[in-house]
Image (cartoon, rainbow over all chains, first blue to last red; front, side):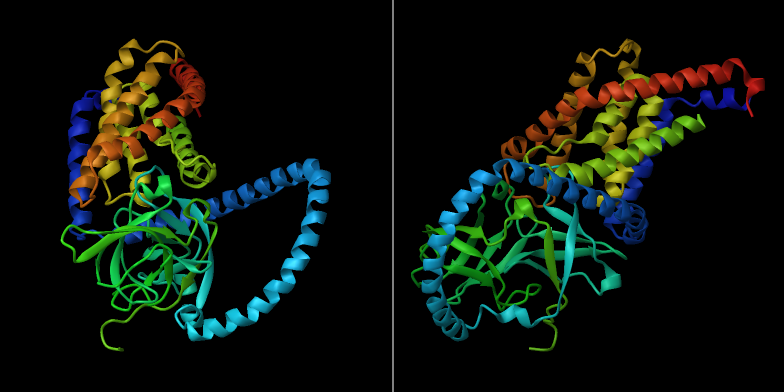
Length: 284
Length: 176
């Protein structure tokens, strides 16, 4: 009897009810009356261990696959490599000399080592955003490891993005190629500031647009762009990328162009989170 | 009924994990199918409007929890998609693939257009065609490819479940 009664509710009515529920939820979360974070926290705790496991399996499989391939190509490669060794040995002597020069120049060129002084924590990328819409990804470190929102994320020596959401053992990073991302940068030598925009098509041709560079200096391709001192969220002096193209705007005041990011966003596995949040309130 | 809910929950979990953790590592840049959408479309098509609504709602909530701009956005979209596909349940009879492929394509298109409108309204600075080329089309194509694989599986699971349910209905006194 009970069952029959339930059948009489038309699916249309269920739909209308749920639509209202959804709209209510959207409204509540957007006006942040209903905090999303705790719910996402619960989801994260449930799903992050699984993601971690899958990630391990995936890495193992890739390792195995490349192992097999190596066996096949081994002998051919071995010969090639022997030749290379001879070449490289001679090259090495030259490089050792240049290394000394480099260290000396690095000391002069202070920007480079700047962010190595901050405390960092390593993290693995365990999930990416599904679909092509945004370029956010999940890492396997969270508030347990001392991560908070707005911490900068780097990889190798380049800027990857910024932490936007933190859970217990996971956090979400918005990369600088995300559509929503705008990073205040500057040229490393002349300290001219500009804005580096996130762009969907970065995925396609590996470059990011920048603009609003207000300068009379000659900016040439190859110039380093680092995060600027006036950025309110990014620590100063982290390498973003190198200019490959620059044009003067029609107003003859500002310049726009493209940079090549220093990080390879297609193959991001390990990242470092800088455990320091830029303090623009007092401090400086 | 209970069995169906549990099986669906497991399927949703597996698909969500696949979509978020495994598939992004496949090196093709544009291979980003929306597996949960394929599931919602298949359920709506095979089971009707009511199932389509609930499944869409559940799958949407899972997506929202992880990457949604706010809770309820994907839920609303996928629910509508499930409901709309439920109307075509009448013409569902066998594991023919033509219909699901068409339905997935249309649903993907709808989903993509809604999402790009949302993105543009919330401050995206690109033209609509750029979104079509960079996000909607690649996702549509890879989803269709995955439909070929997944629809057969969903179909088989649905048949197995229906068989169980029929058995239970015919012999209610044997139920524990």
